[in-house]
Length: 518
Image (cartoon, rainbow, N blue to C red; front, side, top):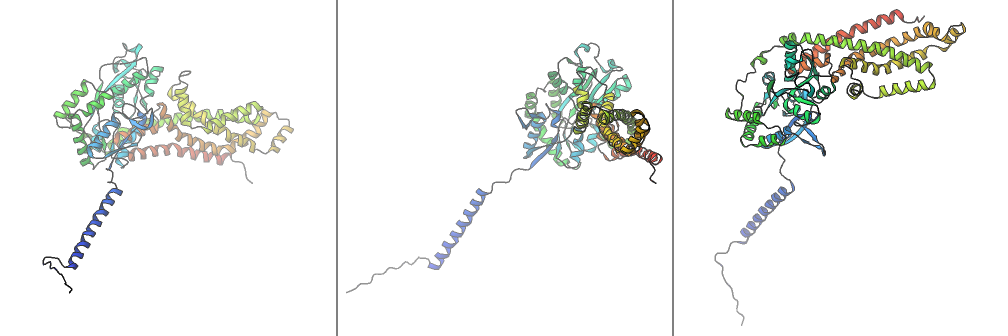
């Protein structure tokens, strides 16, 4: 007998429903696993950058390349920018820019904030979004140790040459002192060479920020900085107009870093913290940020017409300096060029070789380098005045080009004419003076004129050896006005006024002296 056993589960779920629940759970697990895998394979996006601009050429204590690792920057502005970026939740990225171009670069959007010893001025506050000051500096006078008792103040330097960095508060201070005391301001493109020129005797004093003076005294011996401050200034960060919201956030970060002592630790590491800086920070924090009495309205109200009126006389005087340099250098270059060309055409093999080496060296190296070597490199042997060095440097460079023009013109005179002249009994000197020279001059006139116009423009390079010519004065105008538009147009117009008459004169001479063609 067979028995069938069975049982009954009254609460069991229907099988189709169970299968649907299992499928749903599996799908949810797959989605979770995929999301987890996606999270592991795609890291979180990095924080946005804070691009800050500065000039590493200026060196410590602001921004400089680490001597042990040139790819790494150091300086108190580097560390301050890093703290600002950290307070904003960003990562700092440095952008190199020439110090005098920081304002214009930040305005065109090259970076978010400029920080490299940027001075707080009413004009800058009026034109840009500027942060609260984060460091107070003093303008001080540095002299040679032997002159420490004679030159204690600017009033003691009547008739003396005093150097500083161009387009700065110190330069404005020296211009005022020139009117009041009769001293001679000398503008430099960097803050290193003023102190070396002071030691070498080209200058009798240097006026710059006390942190720069202290650094230079550690590097150059024989200098003394007078303890009295000539003026007080502050370093700030500069942002483009319209970025006031970012500026306000940066101000809050700077105040927080003042309160918690972070900025003090940074400045102590760079040996620039003192009692004056401590008092400045305490007062700034007590006032909640902005300095008392701040007013940029006067600078903001300055019109373009007023700026032109103020700077046009200086531009015209600088144009006169450009003319003197260009004409003197060209005259000397022509004389040297004739000598070199004659030596290469008529000289013995040794002379020709020496002249050829000179031509190739002068044409193959930058004129800017030649000016540096002539003015600074040879200063231990001969200390040329800046204007003399500018004329000689340009003349030596252009003499190489002129000599090639003259040599080509001399060799272009048909040989048959030279032989005919010798057959008639003319000496080599007479052949050169009566036959070859006049024809060569006609051939060389056009390229000579081109070279003169080029020299007129290349004279702008002499600003690197402290000569304030047209382009340098324009740069000072642009830095003070905050724009290159009007200064650039005025500068270009003055260069055209100088160069167009030269071209017209050259064309008239060519028409008058050109050889007949029929």
